[in-house]
Image (tube, rainbow, N blue to C red):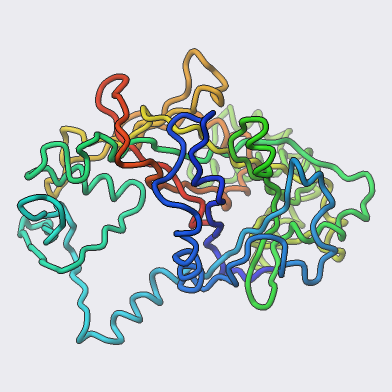
Length: 424
């Protein structure tokens, strides 16, 4: 079983992710994998993950190793997990341990980057408090580390010297927004139950004190040969479909009763919830006595020989990769927040080759921007309520800033997500 303190999932981008591929429009990064590797290694150590090794090598201890698969199509890889407090609690401890060299400015939000007269370099950061007070901090070096949404938000809002925002002369800041949609891949049943203990490589495990989870991925050779997008697959141990569906419904009914929203619609679902009556005591006993999720989860692990007889199937979840789309972007709205910062609009849709409805692809906007993500809401209904601990979004910028992209409609903006860090 894995250590429950480990809740942040890590995996670096693959070399193929950096390549400009002729068959994929707007693909490629302005840096190479080799130039990024040393930074990945440093980040791996800073985040207190294991060694910088994401192939099965070194992660097979206590298992029979990965499955023997067609190496030309699918390969096995590893996610690593780091402690939840590596970024926050321990980072604050390091800062406060040497107060003479650093200081924390609380209650202030960066609202603008102040550049030199030529706008070739940032010289200061302008911050604002809720009471309206403005603070300007000058520095030799400024690190912008707001993530895939925060970075373009601040760059676009820094428009007093450049009307389009800093670094946005080619109208690329905020463009190519990407998500990694979770796709329900159905269930996988092994008729030979001896395969359960032989599949512990794909379980959440501790190896030399570090948490790891094996998963399946399309090989670079298959991606190139068939013009595919990246796809990773994780297997989750589950009870039978009858128990899973009934128990998920049971939890929803309990929540409806707790919040006084139990009506006739919920009452009609009671007979279906009773289908899992034989599993409810087991699930809640596991939750109360072992501090584990009421359904099997990534964090709990549980596909070992000792517990394999408790599961009937694997739930298959695919994490898909989108094609780069310049119309997926973040922009600034005309509304402002309490400190006068323009509110961020997030405009996103499935790429056309992936869209389940080509005529009306689902659109997603942030709660600040308007419409919610209809696609993810459908996905949530398909997954059981106990499976909400594994999803997450990630974002970054992954396009050559010197390449101009024509605006196909009204103003758009860019970002695309790395696979290096994700909340687990």
